[in-house]
Image 1 (cartoon, rainbow, N blue to C red):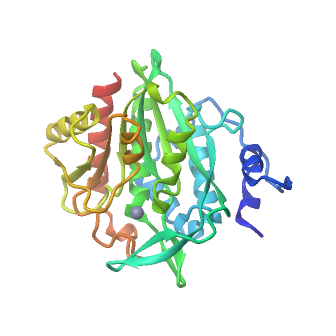
Image 2: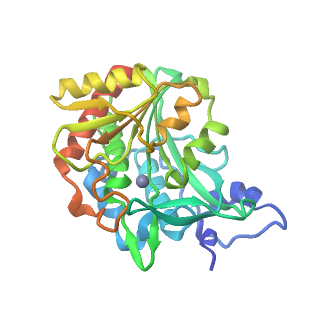
Length: 327
Ligand SMILES: [Zn+2]
């Protein structure tokens, strides 16, 4: 069975148009409706709870376009719904924004497994971003918190769990939103959280969003992106951005208030989803652990690599930065 046949109903209409002709009827499970009420179980979860779920064997390394990605997307859509956030995906798809990914092939660069473009670029497969928001007093001024949830999948019989890259970032962003919801204060600006897919294939999900956003891009005042935040020396972080901007300023101030360091570092051939927003002239920054490259894109990127204290600190910094930008 093809992976897309597992997609739930709310993916269907957007996926069908992407699949083109002839139209395909998909056999799909029932729709989960957004609840609107905050579910206590979800509100009390932690980043580590999310990371355990996202790195479980059935997630199969969350490769974009795979059944593992769909399972991860289902988990995240359920969390957004249980947190009572407003669906901000495609108009008829709730939290889901559907897009397609080009074919890719695995390759190793300096020992790291990565993807390079495949041959037949007209053969695309479906993938999804997940987007939900907490409305502020100014509904049309948005602070966007994001993390990619996809990873590399399974290669040569080995699962690449991607605990640090980037279950850690997803957990961090969910932690920040849960804390804001627990405190119960209405922000001045709307806070949107987004989980991108196909980052590992070249920022495809975030680029699809920038290309075809589900709300006007000029409403986004800053983007705080978390990628691979859970390892290394406690308090040792790094930032990627196209120079100084309001997002960089906020996260750097937050780091210094927490006694942590977050140095702006050169890209050196690597980047993350903040680049998609920087190219659209939106202030954006990616926060990562300074030692992010350690065991990155290897089967050893497991929970054992993570330091919960480092993830908590990343969440604390992100939270403080959001307080500065949205309250
Ligand atoms: Zn990666």
